[in-house]
Figure 1 (cartoon, rainbow, N blue to C red):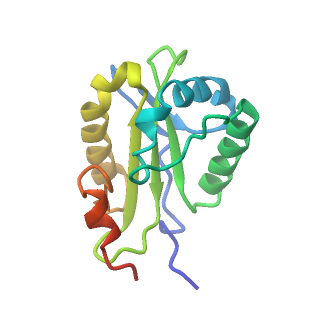
Figure 2: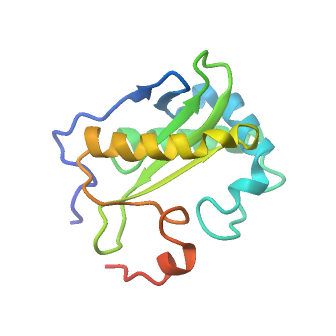
Length: 162
């Protein structure tokens, strides 16, 4: 049986509050805000999870997005993966998302991905730095990987998966 992604007794962070944004668990409650952020930024997002990824598809619908957010919420509650929405301080605009996944790459204990919508890409570096600090201070991860960000895609694809 594989090791759990986080220890069974680990209390999951519910989010993070800064002057610039709110980080909250990603659920279908923000589906419309998330869908707007995703579809308005789809060209940028196609390199977030892999070089030249096909997500989000041009024909992605709000219903597809709701189903995706339900999956993320179920993974969160099952402690299999952790997705967070990045909201403006007034919670009226989705600025992006943060995803934490288990990894099979030797030397790392999680894979961290994040994105911000095209119209707020000035927040990208701030969010990345904040997430790095948040992982170090609030999570049991000692060596998070940031594929496509701190580790170029060709190098990440060439890493040895255990």
